[in-house]
Image 1 (cartoon, rainbow, N blue to C red):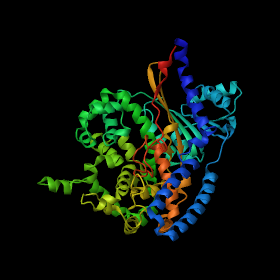
Image 2: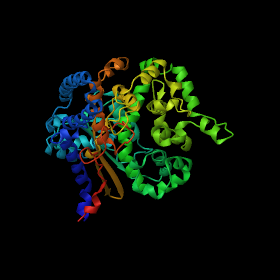
Image 3: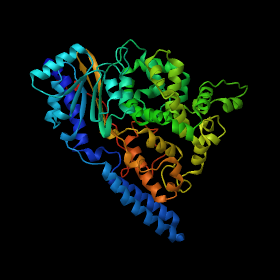
Length: 536
């Protein structure tokens, strides 16, 4: 028992690294969110439904569409294959945190086929760095070991890695370290390759924070699929959770392991696929000037949106006055996450500092408001107070109003394709999201000495075979006139959503072509494995 406990960290490390390498080599094709096989099956299904709907009434349309689609499909397959190339372990570039004994990781990496020349190790502590260098020197191992901050390394160097092993050894929020800042720099500066793996290892929550208050803003506006099972015992809707924040926070504290584990698994993919890409898009001055309001007007509108004062004497007046995001909280999850953080945490809290991260005068908080509202563009004319048109420039408003998927009013697909899909394509084009594959996720927990550790392997796909298939916004109208282009997009969206759904259900919502069944299933998210349960 004792020897197993001493080796449990090494056992976890080996499992994590082995899964990461196999996901990028022998199982690489299965790691991409879109496959040619599924694409063919789902677009064949879409086309058969389309031709059945059209019937024999329009042979000219059918012939022209077939000609466009099969030519476009073959061209897209060539584009897909140019991006989704195979790799061997010897080609993978790896970065990890060194510690005093860097050989532990090197031994596993090299045994799995990684070349020494492709390994970087980072260590910020001077004394530990010197121990690590001596250890490598004595073993006559030459890798690239750098003394410095991981955050600074990601921010200021141009290196790109297939695998980053971020063994923080602290909770995801820590006064001594800044794990959120490190994660932010990884995704902001695109330090991972197009298909890549991020391995994270965080310690259990410490008593220096009220973790219920930290986690409640994340879970309160979420849909049931992203909540721990124990959340059913609280028995309240998303709106009720937001309204009874203190009670929900206390409930989370009583079941902290379940919520903390789920938070780690879901927050990091949402950060990679939506939070940072939304910030990237919103911070682009050209996007602001061309598609939103000018900087001064935009900031004024955002201040108004965030600080709504209700002056209603009746329920009907209240419905007219209350912001729609505060009424339908679960369809604006990231906006309400930022709102609840602002309302319930102190000004010097790490999460406040995170959402106040500023890039070209645009904060993460502001970008979550902007993009969450844009994703709900169709709510603008419902009569609720949405503010959507308040932040749109005339050009973007005209484009989004005019554009629709050609089958919008045809009863062909499981979901009606809404305009949020267009907004998310725009975010993807400029924001370079990393979208995690739920089925490839590996989550572990184990007790090292006296501390429980939570490890996750996230397999990320940048999906450039979709986003780079698109032209820029000013050419979308002519691009979308080709219905075959739309079908190619829909085929990609369908499978991305299926393989990402149980990590973040808000990405490409209403994007399914076909219902979830045995033939067109969704990737299941594996449960976290407790390695201590296997002690002998």
